Amino acid sequence: MPARQRPAVHRFGPLTGIGDEAAPGTDGQLTALRRLGWTTVELRDVDGTALADLSPAAFGALARRLSDDGVTVAAVASRIGNWSRPVTGDLGRDLAELDVLAERCAVLGCRLVRIMSYPNDGLPEREWADRVLARTAVLADRAERAGLLLAHENCAGWAGDRADRALRLLRAVDSPALRLLFDTGNGVPYGYDAPAMLRGLAPYVAHVHVKDAVRLPDGSTAYTLPGEGDAGVAECLRILAAHGYTGALSLEPHLAVRPHEGLTRAGEDAVDLFVRAGHALAALLGPGRALA
Image (cartoon, rainbow, N blue to C red; front, side, top):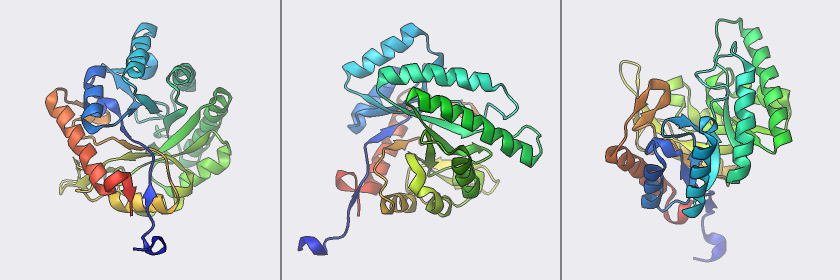
C-alpha cells in the first residue's frame, strides 16, 4: 500500500504501571515489570509505606535498586488531596509531602506528581470550591518553584467527576505546573461516562492511568482486564491519540490492590493479575504500542 494510503498510526509513550498494584515490595514490583518487558514504573507505596514516608535509608535503597535494574520513574502517585484528606484538613500536611517528593523526584529523575482535589467535609458547595481552588494554587506555586508538574486526577475531590470543574480548576490556578491526569476506569465507580468527559479535557492531559470496570446490579464496582469492562478504555485511547497525547500509559488495574477499599493481595496471584492486565493493555494498542 502506498504510504499516502496507509491509515494514520499514533504511538503513545512508554507503558508503565503503579508498582504496588503488582506487589508490596520492590522485588515483586520489578518482577512484574520484567515479565511485561517494561522499564518504567509509577511509584506510590513500597512495603506498605508511601514514597514520601520512606526513611532516608529505605528511599536510598529503592533509588539504587531502580537504577541498577535500569528502571526509570514515570510519575509519583501522591496522597495530596486524595480520598483520605478532606478539604477541611491541614494543608500543611500536603505541602510537607510535596516538599519531600520534590527532593525524591529530583533523585529519581521524575517531575510528575499525581494529586486530587479534596473530598468535601460538610461544607457548602461554594466554600468547598473556593477552598479547593485556593489550596491547589498554593500547591501549584510550590510545585513550579520545585520544577514539578502536578497532574490532577479525575477521582476523589471537587473537580474529580466533572469536566467543567476540572477546566475551572486549570483556569483559576493558571499555572504551567498544573495539568490533568485522566484515569480511564474511574467513570464506572463515580457514575459518569469517561470518554464523554475526556473529549473536553484531552488537550490538558499530561498523564494517563488505565483500568477497566463494570457496575454490578447492587451498585458496586468490579474491576476487569483493560478492554473487558464498560469504561470505554479503547475509546479513551482513541480520543487521546486524536489529540496527540504521547505521554505514558500507566496501568492501575485495581485487580489485587484497591487502597481506598483496604484491599491488598500479595504473592504470585497479584503479580499474575498485574501481568495479565499489562498484556491486555498491550493487546488494545497492537504491535509496537501503536494505535491505528
